[in-house]
Length: 419
Ligand code: NIG
Ligand code: FE
Image (cartoon, rainbow, N blue to C red; front, side, top):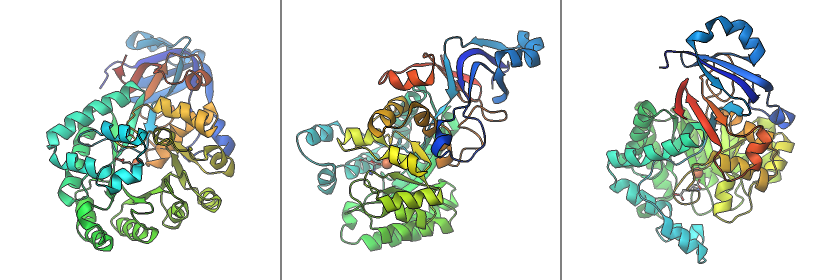
């Protein structure tokens, strides 16, 4: 831990996103709590004070000599970005499938022919824990270099007990050793394993009988996710898996309505999921129900771009009152990126969200989607000191100068981790 306090002074804009821990909706998603000539005092890994530089001078001026002073003049300072949906721990790579898709094959065709998720599952089963750890460590480094300080990660590239546990244990170790906080999700129902084709219900029973209890017993996951999609898991099978997870204390999430409309958004509301993900083909009724229930929509515009699909209706969802979060979906098949800045840019460009909404979706609302809102997601007294200083003057510029990495400095629990 940093022994000396850190004093950030004179930020051109400090986007605090302060004011409570509930997910933001509608106009709330535009309120960034901007402080001009902003200042933050960090001590013992925590944010101790936030205000204008003049205000903090009054309070801390006498201790200036003890602190490491950071001049943020002409810079934007935000909370560390949060990526609430990734498949960051996996073996191998799938660039050949990218080429196949560009030559005309579809994502589902490749998967149904034994490639896609199945190909990564084979490579993940073959990889040792050390190899998975090494590969994933590098990806977390890349997240950090893009200003991401908290990441959710899913299992699901095993779909057998041994490999699922291996992935989750690697995540636990990464969380302990890497500066990024990694929040684990069990996703044993990521695809139907090839040797269980035609016996889907039996696999669901196995997952419920053997995998869920073991994952819960070892406390390896907080959330439970299912790929609810035509040709993968039906809404009935999804419901069964998520209800069984709830009995073990695992909070539901759903990969919903990604490729075809399938009632996934409605099901997320019915089972009390914290979030529904993707939602490219979500129905109007599903969106309305999510708004009513406060179910978070976790939208993944980089996946839509990479699959050459129309993005989710982010604008409509915000207008309807759905709390929207955004994420990379970092995975080897449909979105091999670690850039949350690109995802914010795409939230604006492909989903017509405003620059402010995109920033809230990548910070506070993303924290809410993984139950981390009391610790991270805004710059407020008492929260973990996870912050980013960007080489731009304001939040609009961050979203406008798209495709580049504007990170200047990153603090994680008060430590400088990128400079
Ligand atoms: O969120 N849609 C299902 N799962 C992942 C893709 C995983 C893969 O292709 O390896 C997703 O897009
Ligand atoms: Fe995903």
